[in-house]
Image 1 (cartoon, rainbow, N blue to C red):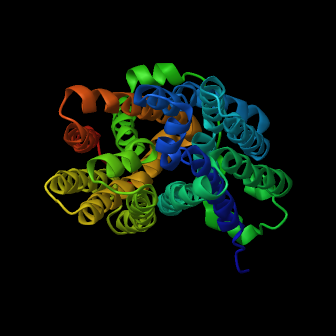
Image 2 (tube, helix red, strand yellow):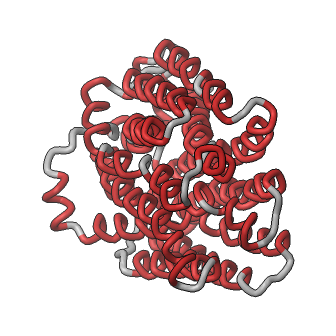
Image 3 (cartoon, helix red, strand yellow):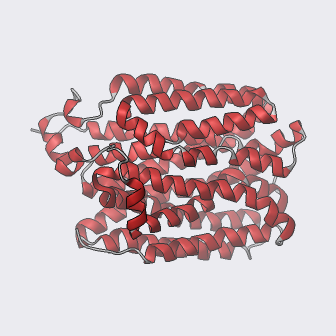
Length: 413
């Protein structure tokens, strides 16, 4: 019997949710300077508004994963998509307090997406394909940002940024309705999955999932691997968020780029991140099948990619031509994207039946980093040397992330 391929439809559903979530999440950054000028905000106020997403997003990771344990991925992901769509529409109110509150509510709504999706991938995919699945998922996160950057710049000028956010709220609601109707949490219960596909998924996939978060804080206290994964995620998320917050403004102010051109250039490092996620997952799984060594396929690959990322970012510091500098930074972000599937596959292996909980904890720590960097940027600009200091800090955190990966213990499958 030829196996069905419903697991790839499930992956496509998760990837589309990731793209939609990051599309609305990062739709603010390309319009930041326009919104700031229209509302008469300072850069500090604008930075606080953008960072308002990440504090509740970080703090709600574990509660969202626990709610998904009760509701199941099918209903919880649909609920979260409706919630973040309402938050997107609320941004159109055009008042700093309401916009900050909507941004925070969006953080609450999207908190469960990554941990629940990791649990779904662990349930629907065998170990030797989990990095590939995770790479596609992480790649589509940046794909949403890529679409958002130029489309936002165009809609800001054509419709105005308030109506733009109303329009951005619609796709998430449509996705939620379809996913709640079609998805099944257990592959064995999906009517389109045959016995051959269940055998292909294997027992490792079938046993994994969104187990409860019982004992997670004790595990964090006694498990060095979880600590290291949390800390490297803090660094990597802080680095990535530069593109979702201040990068377009950096291009406009430090490199003299126009609004529209900066929006298009912002897509280049995000596109590189997508390519890194896709190819990194394929390469990591191929290395694992060939060497059967997680130290090589996950840890070693992540370390090398992060160090190369930092080297390329520092190289861009000395490049005068703005387009060439963005291309060099984009090459660095390709390397950073390679790490995403290595990280997610490591979570699925180390977390076992608690993969969703491990993902929730590490993602929570990552978003503390993401929440901190947009606030830190205005201070670096004012007191530490301007945009050069921002770029230096941006590269340094990837070196720290590589050192944290070096401390993880390796092993063989």
